[in-house]
Image (cartoon, rainbow, N blue to C red; front, side):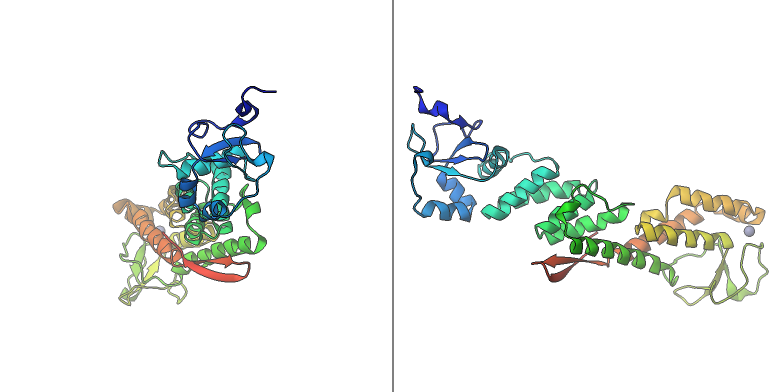
Length: 329
Ligand SMILES: [Zn+2]
């Protein structure tokens, strides 16, 4: 027989290993955490209810040395450590990675602990840019719609929606993400349906259609309703063939990645400038206004982003109810 009954139990690391405390939480992997009922009761309505109700006593539910009650939990020691550190007025527990975030959100839901949800949301918000699909999956699964909407907007920077955490999404929720991306693409491409957002028409790329001037080179297509560009003020312009090709290529790129940065990608702009410089007249005009295309692309990119941010993100709640959240920039 052991001289000290405590030696028969495995205790957690400090500060949950001490003699201070009036309740012991036992993890699924049989680690014992010494804690305070009043702190747990304040942090969690579920613990509050648990400690209010009379508990049945068995030989296994009492610590032999102190007669303190032992509560068996289904979580492992890692999860209980995070939960207790979140409750105590000390430094917040550090959580890293999606598995930690999942554990914390599960604890938050089960034990109704707002502080845990806050910790998970802070961590997930920080990793949205690097892992938007996983954050979307986790946030959707736990009905954190604002967080999921923010993550959805960042999926527009991705070429693929694959993520190791897709198993958290049911098929309908994944469909809603794919559908969101499609609607973002449509919104992005719709910016080329009219040109009232173009603020300046540099002669390097444009020519007023109504001036009846001879074309400076063969790069300007003949007037037609399809190629006519009407400004916000109602003035009609023509644009060079290579400018139109740039627009067509951006539409293709925006279909795959509906984000403003696509249209101002330097590689994209260089290819267009190379084409322009193949014509000596266009080269002369572009050399006289070297920022013309880049400035245009910047305004274009802003217009694309303004259109995409209007697209709402839809969610399934309670398995069937769909809500929409305005997409956040
Ligand atoms: Zn030309």
